[in-house]
Each structure stands twice: as C-alpha cells, then as structure tokens.
Image (cartoon, helix red, strand yellow):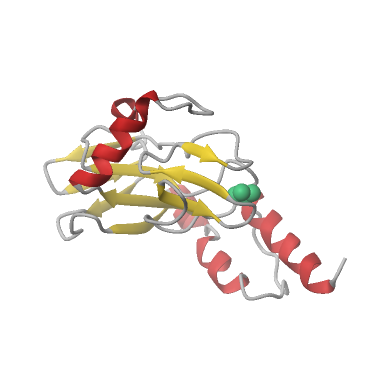
Length: 175
Ligand code: FES
C-alpha cells in the first residue's frame, strides 16, 4: 500500500472513531479533522445553539456538536418536494421524510457517513440532490436518506429542538 494511502486510511479511522491526540498524522485532511477533535470543554457541552435566522433558503451550514459535524440545511420548496416524493422510492433504509424533520424547511443531520464515517459533501452533491460521501461513493437524498452506494443507513438525525423561530438547539440539555 502506498504511503499516501496508509496516511489517508489513518486519518479516516481517526474520524470514524473520534480519536484524539494523534499528533504527527500527516496528510491534507488533518487540519480539517483536527478542527472537529473535541476538547474537554466541548465534550462537556451537551448542546449546540444555532441562530438559524440568517441561513437563507437552500443554504446549509455545518456546526460542531459534541465534537461532531452537524449539517443544518434550510431546505427550499424544491428540496422538500424531492424528499417527500421519494418516500415511495425503493429506499435501502426506509423512512418517511416527515419522520426525519420537525419542520419541513429544516433538515438537521449528523454529517457522518454511515458507511465508515467520512464527512459527506454539502447539499446539492451526488445523484439525488442531497449529499455525496466521496470516500466510497454513497449518495444521500435531500432527506439525508441513503439512496445509492455502500452506506447501510440514512444519515442520523440528532436530537434537536427549536426555541422560538430562530434558535435551533442540538442535543439534550443536561438535566
Ligand atoms: S465512508 Fe462514506 S461511502 Fe464509505
């Protein structure tokens, strides 16, 4: 195996396991992955609050939650329609779009591919208008459901709730 492949594999496993402290790992992916490594204070924080008022329709942002990336997509009418119309498709991991969102215009997803843990690309990638994981070619739709490729499951929807119209709280506040 070429050295580059070995390094990529190592970076990749780190992301999949959420391992920390791998100082010295080389490769272009490292600075990105490092930014998601949870520090103790991040891990102690159970929730992430996001002001969604400035996310335009069709726009997506990625926010860290407990050291993991979360996609927050303000779906357009077209993206919602695509997702709902695919409810009856032959889905590898069947789920209704309605059961994956609290409000049709907001899609909140753990941005970790269910194959081996890469971070998929942003909305509008892949063959179903959703998210492409380029590691091994998994295609997710605009509901985050797996449609094609080796990933076995849909992108996970984390626990979240809305506080008013503009604040999204990801995670559960500690009791
Ligand atoms: S990790 Fe996403 S397709 Fe393999």
